[in-house]
Length: 401
Image 1 (cartoon, rainbow, N blue to C red):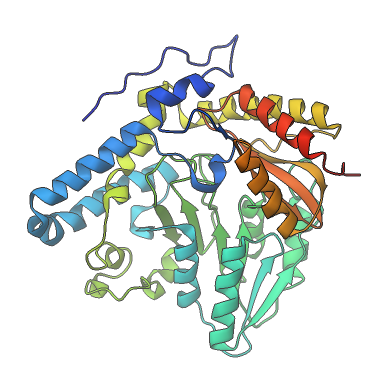
Image 2 (image 1 turned 60 degrees about the horizontal axis):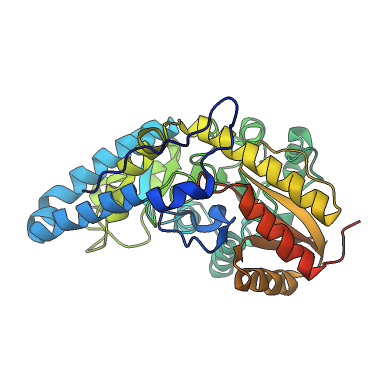
């Protein structure tokens, strides 16, 4: 396996925003001719993690018979222990799945959906999650209740306002409540802890935490029935890997979407072998979780602080160049800047033109406003924001009010 020594240009007290593009050739395969400002969508797998994934593939190929029949289940169990420690949860309540979208559909199969049952979620839900809810409701004759998210204040929604909005939508027919920990299009961190504490005993709560692993140290709130989070976004995992955490009261009801011959093992063992699949992303998870300290000399928390510092400086630069107000920090290395007005089609078209100009950034439309959702990982420096500013200036979008 190739060794990748820590780079010398690490953050210091005098320069907390070091790393950046100089780091890419050492630890990532990222195209040096592109400004990569959309880590939040798909992540970027570091070279040491790719090496660990290749080593896992070679281990399988040395004896596929032995691996799948004798080694896979205990290997997955060991990885599950490591991921549970990272998330500060009981490993008996954690299963590995391909992605958060799959995990949401697992949960929808576990709850008691019948004709007239209701699922409550917000209007900032991830579109794939909303699609899964719609399909489940159509199949079971259940009803969707979409709750407008209260107005955010300083990068989040006040806990009392969110709890009141959700509680107002609950009835004795509510079978599930779905709330994002970090919203996708708008990059708002929502107070799911307060929601779980106030409403979790009344209605099972599913926390969609697709962006949380690697950004929030203890992301799983007490009182949530279900929590799902991607590991290939901010936790450096190979694609694809995610965690599904289930409270004790619900574990007997949770089954994988693919029928498993290990069903008798119950949760989470029934998720460990779903036929012949490629488990190498899971097997590389220990390398992913060790990556920041081993190769950057930083804990996840220290890296988050560095990335937030770069993002704040970059958003200030963009705001000044575009003549808009920079947002108040949400404390995350992913945030949005209003850049004009338009619908989803306009957002897709603008993102495509920026991509053609060598800038990868998420453009979203929320309530008719176009937002540049920018996310920063260790390989990003301010030069990427300079390129984005020039590309957006060339577009000359209508400034937001």
